[in-house]
Length: 412
Ligand SMILES: [Zn+2]
Image (cartoon, rainbow, N blue to C red; front, side, top):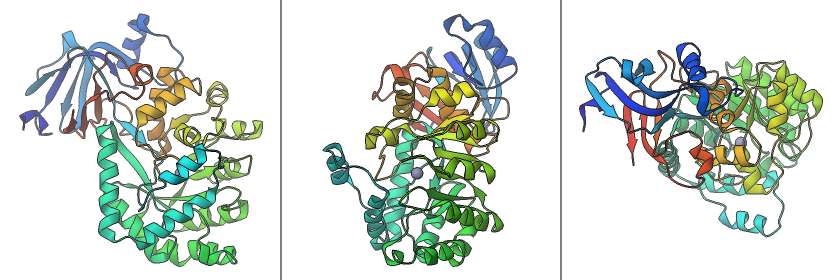
């Protein structure tokens, strides 16, 4: 093990061809001066060229031109490759058992997607042992890390009993601080004739059991899942228990989700596939991030969200994987970036910003998603000279190394 894996030793990474910082100040100004390679416009995106950075005690201690880099205990040569902030995945469902490959195949053969498919994962999750769920969760987290995701959110929502939701959030809390209580994912079969009774449970005993391990509360606000009044009730109950709201909104059709998210002060409205002008206006005027999940539209063969409309209106946009066994079973942020660029007409800079700093905003985190001074030293180095390769070489495993809090956590 190299000494520079120790976060207490300062590390200089130099000869970085492109260093994406997303940071205001000197880095951003430098990016403009050396911006002949690119163009301006992507809100917040900033990069340095022929750059270096210093990690000290798990944090970014210095960034700038390689020629001016200070000395450090250890030195690594990036050989002209690109270094980016670690990806921040603000929307993932990783606590489940089973898989739904056959459902995907059927969908590709013409069977439409509906929220009801969630129930088959619920049955498998309830039947699984804690050890099985934890092994699956840790496996997916490792898969994400190897693809450059250094911070992620994780939702419950495949247990849907007090005990199964409680163990879901407890397992998630063992692996990420960004745990979301999603008891209101779908009404389970045993409450089919009494959805109001299920909402009472979600707002009552189940919330009480889950709140100690959760930071966020979420609702699948959609036809076939939970309506406006139910969504408002769950978010209000969650907030009263100390949880902050976020919301699945406007995925399968137009609906009240985005407006509910904004009025609740949610950190994020996720999906945003079907938006009215009023929805776009509400997002622009709010602190609520529009989180787009293009892997879902890919995997359900639905129309992609109109990212350009949101960006051009001035909304803050994040991209996340929505990794889950039903509607989108990818853990690749690079794939989502490629989709965002190719299918949603985001620029490569906008897409990379959305997958890093945008995800951090959607989790209300200011220590990740950028490489400004003092940020957590979460880095991805690609075997590529620029961030554009994430979309330019889709499907190619480009990640060379990943650092989390200054520790080398993955190396290809
Ligand atoms: Zn989701």
